[in-house]
Amino acid sequence: MGSRDTTSVGESSVNYQTLEFTYQASQDQTAPTPVRHPVVIVGAGPVGLSLAIDMAQRGVKVLLLDNDHKLSSGSRAICFAKRTLEIFDRLGPGERMVRKGVSWNVGRVYFKDEPVYSFNLLPDVAPASATQTEPTQARPAFINLQQYYVEGYLIERALELPLIDIRWCNTVTGLNRHSDHTELNIDTPDGAYTVHADYMVACDGSRSPLRAMMGLETEGRVFRDRFLIADVRMDVSLPEERRFWFDPPFHPKQSVLLHKQADSMWRIDFQLGWDADPEAEKQPERIAPRVRALLDSMGAADVGFTIGWASVYTFACQRMQSFRHSRVLFAGDAAHGVSPFGARGANSGVQDADNLGWKLARVVQGKSPASLLDSYAFEREYAADENILNSTRATDFITPKSEVSALFRDAVLALSRRYPFARRVVNSGRLSVPSTLIGSALNTADVDEFSGSMVPGAPALDAPLVWAGRRTWLLRELGADFTLLVFGTAPDWAANLKLKVLAIESGVDTSCHAKQRYDARPGTVYLLRPDQHVCARWRTPTHAAVQNAIAKATAC
Image (cartoon, rainbow, N blue to C red; front, side, top):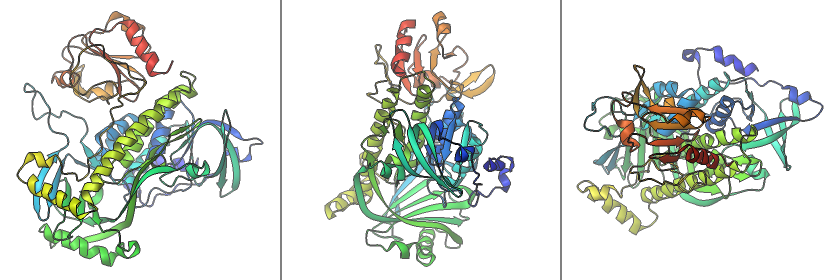
């Protein structure tokens, strides 16, 4: 494909904001009958790209369609959470994203012009015997990185994988569902053509044309407020932290959020109120005084700035009733939406892809029945409900809709300056964390006693390890399929299992972080899914118990 030309371009010479990809006609367009593909993904944003890469790495051929030929304009999503970075590590470009992005763990909350409190999203949890200065996690709590970089890096990774066919300027205009496939009508600069898909995944955004074509809707709550997002380039020296103001003097009765991104770009969110004029507010002459007032309040009156991309938005917290409709699945913003407070949108979408990829690969390859895909719907609908709940609570606190609610919020903020109990109530956006998939049909219930958070359904925690004299990380040593994580020497029968066995023997967990985080003792065993969620754990497992847990987790 012509679009593969970008792989030979050095990163320093690529402008990801203006990067364009080449439309190229495919053989499908002149085929006498519609060509059948095992998986068609619609939408080449972070979610669709992540899913395509995951499936290709699992040996599945993927057709990825996008109606555009460019990356996202402006910064769009910028906050990518630790769990999402761990997924990107497995897909390939994680390290590159972390190097380019701005890493942060600390957030600060202000009420009017006074700091209320700060929080650390990734405090050092080393046991007393560990060296306190050594890193305990491979990835920060968050990085801030413009979405066009994330998409660009993912596309360049996808172009390295011959099983992915990316077709730009290919717009799906209609679909017909059949019992054994979905028929997609596609429009291109050269005219229309049709393909058949064994499975189709809609990753086509919050306004999802595919969802509309199927007569499906999202349900939830629309919030009557408006916010200005401005990307501002400025050379100001501040710690790399998240800053959130309630009712600041420079923007009274409203809220403001400040984040640093790559390339000396700063993301500023100004709450405007429902009556604000969206077109007027995103004009530079309206944005500049707000930015200047913010900088003046921070003692940066001499700092100049340049306004880049800006947008005024409203939002809703909502989701589809079901993410699976037989052979059509929905992921990312096409399936669910939340407020921007908490960075739950793009992160939950990438985690949708992480959940779906291994399951859809097993189904397509004939290793599991199609019923395994029901667990995708259950688990990610559960996660969406959790995100919507947290997002709604944050929005209600940030934008109180009554005088009584505003009085309560301000009283909590005032108390939180001095009293820790009040800080637990302050909500400037509960930041994205991966869901623990309690109640999933893929989990095997505990038969032994454990403490800690690594319950069946939980995402595996990382930990530093020393392997054959080299420093590494637990998550990077896991297999692409199921992994048996053994603390101590692996039992003899483990060699008969068709999965990776990772034995944490003496001298490997030198800092004891893995032992602590997994509440492990000699002989403890965890069974981890391909998406690195726990599906079972035992103190003294048997061969049969592990086999049964694998069968349960694969719907076999």
